[in-house]
Image 1: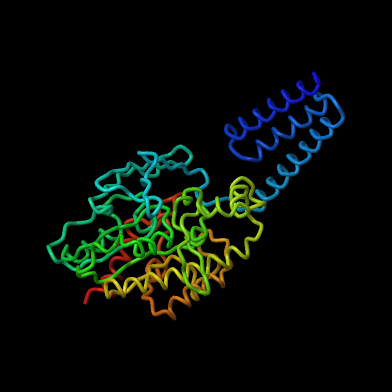
Image 2: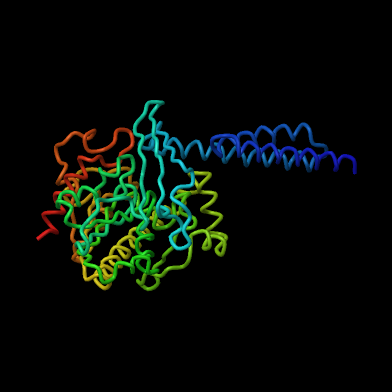
Length: 388
């Protein structure tokens, strides 16, 4: 009995040390390495062959996870912007939202700061108006209205309020039109569909909405299946016989489907687990994405009798090699654009507007978000297409 009590106390201490390592160390691989060392120590410290054998098996399992994680890390290319550190005050910004999961709060501000290897990249203040839109120029009463939806590209992460695409489109038209920047960093097409579906945009019914404009990038594909630590409370959709169906949030789904939930949370810790079933997940993401674009087009027509205009930084038939950091096959990415053309969606190819220009002029260095110059080029193209 004394030996059993001693072993239980040691096991509890070792588990506490592993938990502390998981919280304090930068990755799960390091926590597994600590677990390996503690397991080997247990072979010496525990009393009884059963306890020692169990400790050795635990050490072997932890070492296996460490080696698999290290191997997966070697196969994974270095992420764009490695060395870039971003901070936002307040920390929890955008704010939690009961329908979308998160959204900029009305009449609020956020201060964003980024450094690369200790050197400043940008320092900007984002101003949000009473409609949860990033501020845009004032317009005359009854002016034609253009709704801009999307993620950090449309929102204008890293640039000033007056450098965003919605602001520049308004000024390109001499302030005679009204624009709303209803975007948020980290948004997915899920958020845009849900905003329509839940009636969050119904406040603009009866107003002269002339177009709904979104900006798509390949990184949004993974977000359609909730592959992002910030997306847990965001709306989840699935296809049921080809029909797009809202099923609640990603967190709700993972709690009610524990196997899928366990795989997701373990995949957050270990890249080799995340890679399991990757091809099938990508196929699901591609189908969901196209279905969401089709639904957005439908809502724009039904609610506002307006076109959906898609600005795309995305590979298509003209592209050579990979575009951005997407891990999805180039041909499948191209097919997304092809399918949107078949739907009759108005498309604007950013690469056509920026071809031959210096990258540092088009994108924030080390960060990759569009600069004012890129937004000016797109605003001019939008004016050609939309202003008659």
